[in-house]
Image 1 (cartoon, helix red, strand yellow):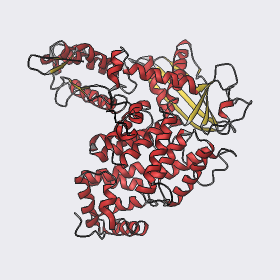
Image 2 (cartoon, one colour):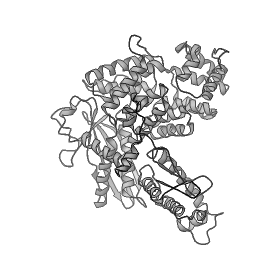
Image 3 (tube, one colour):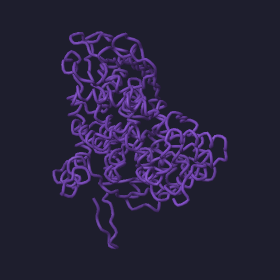
Image 4 (cartoon, one colour):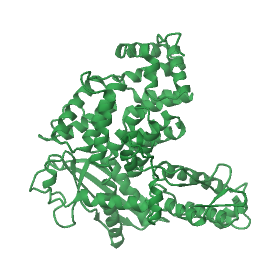
Length: 584
């Protein structure tokens, strides 16, 4: 990957940099107009050619943006504006699908010469789960699998693609073969090919979006996909051989008129044919590649339908019996779990834990059920909810459940997310964050892992990246759980930005969650809102009366760094909590 210069400094080989450039340009997470792609290509190639000193606003304007020899940098800000857009696009790419790329290409602020750096390799999930000493107590040191993959001449990206193809072949099946689903707790989703509602060009986009949509949906392991061949059955017909307990239909249409593309999509209840979600996506086709448009729209549809708190997994409210058919208790447990995660409470915890324990007893191979149960066991410890003194320690049960979830399905993002959380709160942050990296690679459109991983990064000290990830998750998923919104408030408090802390705190408004009132008291106190501070202190002390007595231990178990621990303890004093003077 590197060669050594006369000064002893390591220099990246041009073919390696070009391979990374191609990876960035091909990613659906790098969504920019063609002129920005030309901008990035130009500055990288100029640097590789040894002409870095020529990368200035005038050169870029004349070579990339078609400006004439009389280009006036003072009166024409095109390069500065487009460079800012390019920086944001690169930041977004490396925040999402480029998080484990071995090379980072960046355009530093105030300059146009790209900064190209080598990043540390990251151990893949199978090693962390099976061989990493912190997880499996192995005496063998962790190996870097990229080394032996390179010896075989196999790119890592190709391996990931192959794994996804294998997963797709096993999870996307013909809807007429539903025997294996009769005992599965996963939701059945029948995906119809999108219809071409215009001319020949529309058929290209319809086929591409349909194919890409299956590739995106298969990453959500709470689903069991059934790909329907066009023309085999009517659009609203569900296979009748073996009725499925919970089932949905996803369909759509594509129209092309000149340089405009319109894609409509609908999700239907499989029993009632009621439309439970619909959306329309418009795109300008000028200067964009077909594959970019298809990947972007498919990712948006998949996320809106299949991600936690999306159309299929929106938390239930009130009596769910009218929505969930008889015999579909596993799915009811999943919806109850997401309602609990939205605003944790002792009562909801017991209800969901009992439901999931019954579910995994009846379905011992249900990976997602074990992952969710791991969270509930963990909350016995970190939130003090319904502890079971006669059972093994909560963190032991949580780890066993999370590891079992991953063993059952190593590509289940929800399982990896649960293991990440368990490892983090077991004071193994390095292993936890590596698991998080890999989970995000498996499904960058899953805003739940984006927010959870961001929360753990921020807590481990990488607050800038972590907060950006949580905000990205909230922005991409308007139904994102209030739990992460409250975490945003806490992080802005620790940063010292009380304006944003107050904004996110009021948006969260988790009145049933005790820890929310602790954070609220600290934020209100710093903002000199005495009435709100007093009310929050009173409510927290009512809900968790012994927390303040053990505040050092309580905060330590959450892996805050030394400075954050001091800030939280001093903030508790300022809010009026009875913190002992001996604690500092």
